[in-house]
Amino acid sequence: MRLLLDECLDRRLAGELTGHFVRTVPQMGWSGLKNGELLALAEQEFDAFITVDRNLPSQQHLTQFDIAVVVICVPSNRLADLQVLVPDLIAALPSVGRREATLIGERLT
Image (cartoon, rainbow, N blue to C red; front, side):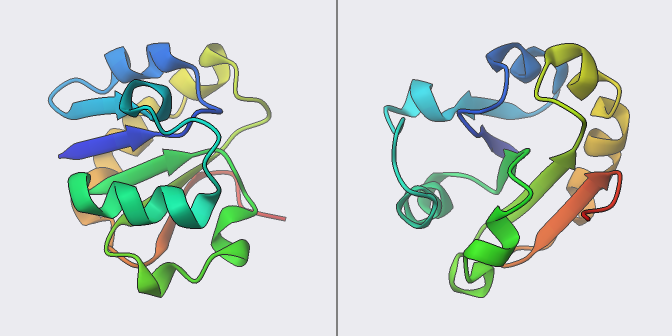
């Protein structure tokens, strides 16, 4: 699966997602883009966009983007917090749906 990690995520998370083609927003040269612009570019090259931005699903009309959005719900974006949910993330990837958000970890509040 082709995965794009949001710029708010520790880039070292890419190494945890073995078996997938993983790039970060900065690697793509897309740092600083607004979410709508970013998703429009990402849908052309990636299957899923991974973020910790809990507001993204309510701020964007995800049905207009042909990409899956995965929100990792963790207390912080520190690598140690993210690593705890890597097995859940990897397990969920085959079933994430395009044009919608999949939540991994604690529920959004």
